[in-house]
Image 1 (tube, rainbow over the protein chains, first blue to last red):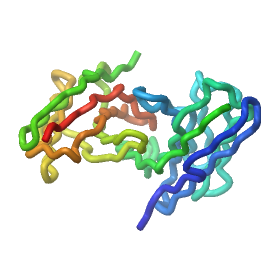
Image 2: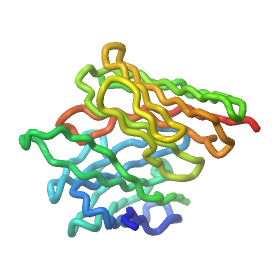
Image 3: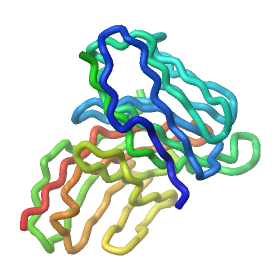
Image 4: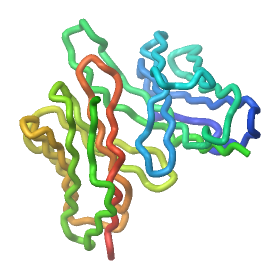
Length: 120
Length: 111
C-alpha cells in the first residue's frame, strides 16, 4: 500500500543534542510538509517542499532545518533541541498541480504516523 | 489573520446518535475544506474533503459546506465508541499550499 513512513516513531534526546527525523513516501507526491504538534493544539506548519523548492514559515525557528534529497525522502534536523521542542512531529504529503496551470490546488494532505520527540 | 474556529468540546454523544461537528472560517477565498480525525497519540487521518456548497456523503459521514455563511460541518450517523477522537477542520486557500487548521473538537461517544 502507498503510504507515508516516519522514523523513528519515538525519539529521546538530550537538551542541545542534535536530532534528525526522517520521512519517506511511496505516494509519489510532489509536496512534502513538516508539522509540529503539541498536546491539544492544531498542527503547526514548519516548512514544506514543492518539488525541490523549500518554503520556510516565517515563525519557524532557525533551530529547525530540512532536507529533501529526492522525491521520496525528507528530513527534519533539530540542531539544538530545547525543552520547548518536545512535541509530535508530523510529515505529510500532497499532490499539487501548481499555480499557473489552470487547476485548483486541492491540497489533500496525507500524514505519516508521526515521531514523538522527548527532550531530557 | 486567517482563522478556522472550532468548539473545543468535549462533545458527548450517545452511541447510535448523530454527532454534529461545526467549523467556521474567516477567509472568503477559501477553496478546499477537510475533516481529519485524530486519535490520542496518533497522527491526523483524512476522512472527508469538500470543495463545493452542499452535502457530501461517505458512509456514515456527511460533510456540509456553506460558503455564504463560511461554515463547514461534519455529521456522523450511528455514532460508535470507535468514533471517539478529536476532529480537526482544515481549510485551504487557492494557490497556497498551506492548510489553516482549527484546534479540533474532542468527540466522546458514550456506550
